[in-house]
Image (tube, rainbow, N blue to C red; front, side, top):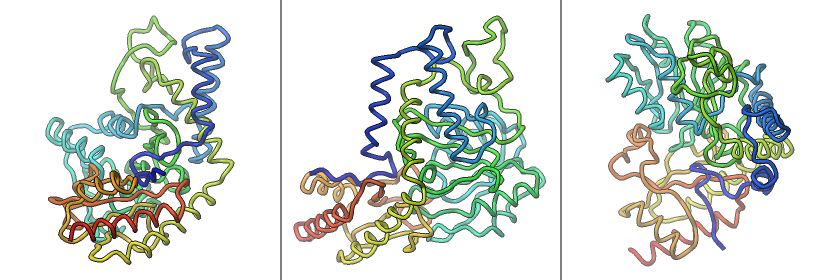
Length: 383
């Protein structure tokens, strides 16, 4: 039996309702959303809007029209950063960011003349709110933070940072790639102005889906311009949402699949999902500690982390370990830098990388046992 432990990259399997909804749309509907006045197009448009409403409810956002669909959290982050920041703006960010944030910021630093301050973090990935406040300057326009590190799993103090940003009249952009669908997010209570999310991780939807929740009045320039299905005689991109930031045909089948995943999440309940993943995280940390020579990074407390555990085996190459587990044990894990070299610098693995397991809602203790047995077998054969 194949065992999948790479849920931090994308969750698998998906609830059966997800492919069923996609299949039903493709086979029995196929209409474009917002592009026709015939019945199937209107039905497709309604299903897309229902997904907007479900996302707004999940994140306690009061206006579904400002839930903007994108192809990924990367596009969402670029939309917010490139669409808002101007020459001379200063940005405060974390030491844990994924390249989806960091590369975009560095490109804007080079090409648009913004400046960047990186808030320090401990080797456990923990950030102090005092350090965030100390990084703010008179030129600061935005604070952008990952909600949880995709390398260490560490949950960041988003509520405290949001309150700070609100007091300082700064925009607050949150990358919820690792948390949406497993940790409650409240854009009102946490003072989140812009929430970037992806559909294919803990929201349990298909790849190619994501979005940006716009919970502020900031002017955002579109990344692209084009057809929206309305006001076609107007020569510029409309200024109303969601059309302002959605040009071209959207991924209707994917969005409908995401809608089915959201229904599954609501039925299960985020508290149930979080409780199971926490229990598996604790089980995995205890089981992995029995592997000789293992070095585990990040928090050893599931309440401080999402279901991500990075580790190395002393004297062994992460990619070789991952390949062995896949080929000999049918256990799939991730190895490398995980598109986040900044986080690896904190733990001293930027030249080496690490192995990483990502625990998901459909994993079981037996999957962890298979991983641990596989690691012990690898060591017997390679020491």
